[in-house]
Length: 168
Image (cartoon, rainbow, N blue to C red; front, side):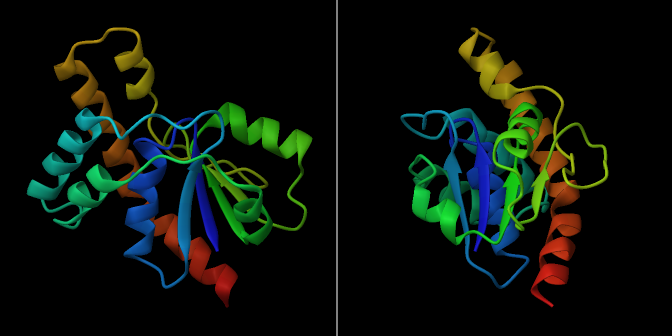
């Protein structure tokens, strides 16, 4: 099983889990490592609709994201995972210091840059969730989500290759 984690499980992790699910034939789940949000941010769904209209993601992904219910990562998920994707640089560093990899590959996605193992960083630089929480306009938040999702789309194939390599 592959586990994709972010802070609230309301935009990045369910979006990326859906992308990976369409690229590899393994069980992919997502969860929050801090506190799950009450629901998926509707502005993240709008951003996903933009990418779907451009043909960058499957047309059903925005609807799947809208139906997603954020959850906390469970001890069972942690025990069952063979590969963890962390969508937050600070968590990835903490995770590696506190938990270690315990033989399980961990990759973090942040900043569109590839950094050597044990942590791999590849995602968006601005945090749409924080922008929205701090009172950013809907237009600015949708634009930030769109940039984040584009970064995740651009790196999904790379992560899928890692997953296929580990499965071999």
